[in-house]
Length: 137
Image (cartoon, rainbow, N blue to C red; front, side, top):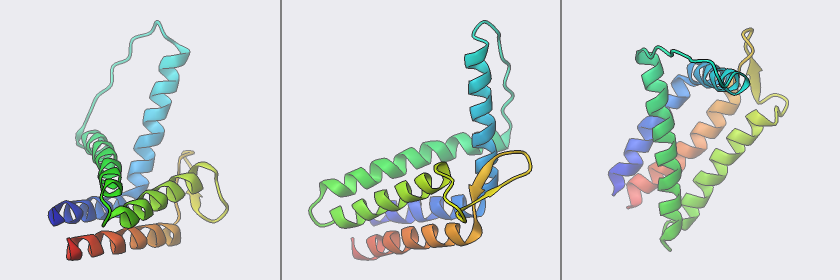
């Protein structure tokens, strides 16, 4: 069971190193969905390359991370780390969506990603909790 925490440590490190690229793909994906809603009769052809497949697989892994946090909440011994991981993930998402001053950087193409200090802080807290889970379970 401790190797699940190690796996999510690797996922968090991937997200830390590729935050700007992931934000760009999320922005592009939102634009595709918005265009589809505005023009329901039109057909779209979307080409997927390696980077797009990495983005989709990261989204699936992010959902698995949230499910892992919910699993941690179900056990009496690990509900505190599970709650903290959920709270940290929610704070990071809320700070970017609410555009809290200093926590984001706006790219010239229009997409938003977390600033370096905020990324260090949130990833550091998540990795600390995951490392404790890896060590103790």
